[in-house]
View 1 (cartoon, rainbow, N blue to C red):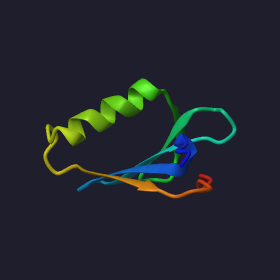
View 2 (cartoon, rainbow, N blue to C red):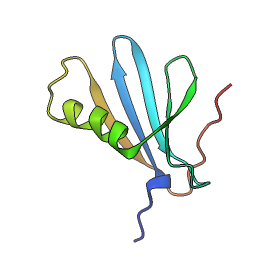
View 3 (cartoon, rainbow, N blue to C red):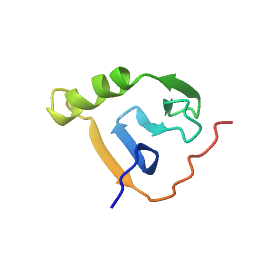
Length: 78
């Protein structure tokens, strides 16, 4: 089974809303979609800096989920 970064969606949920991270299929790298729907480029280090505290439960009230969807198409921001 070949696993690719483009097949995952990382979701952060908190009291302030949801934040998503996707890996772009067009080789642009990681990007973030904010609760307001804005799309921002993100480096792998920025993504990791958000993931690690959530996994370590260092940020109370932040829930992290990772979804695997083969051949996923990321939503476009408005």
